[in-house]
Length: 51
Image 1 (cartoon, rainbow, N blue to C red):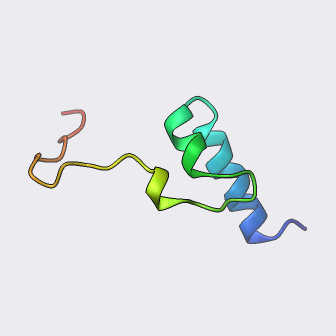
Image 2 (image 1 turned 180 degrees about the vertical axis):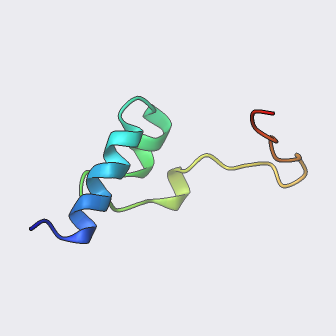
Image 3 (image 1 turned 90 degrees about the horizontal axis):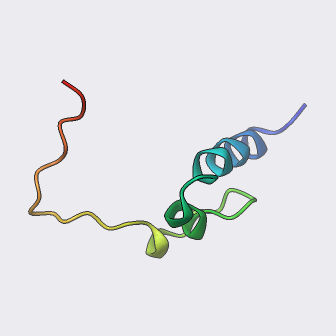
């Protein structure tokens, strides 16, 4: 039975597969490196998403 961390790491890697910016932040073992994550501008309003 796979451990929860391995499952989560696989899911994160699958999400990052088509996103090079995320690939820099997540390694294959599921470690996330915050310094590589895209930074959002705190002054910018969040995208409301699909309406």
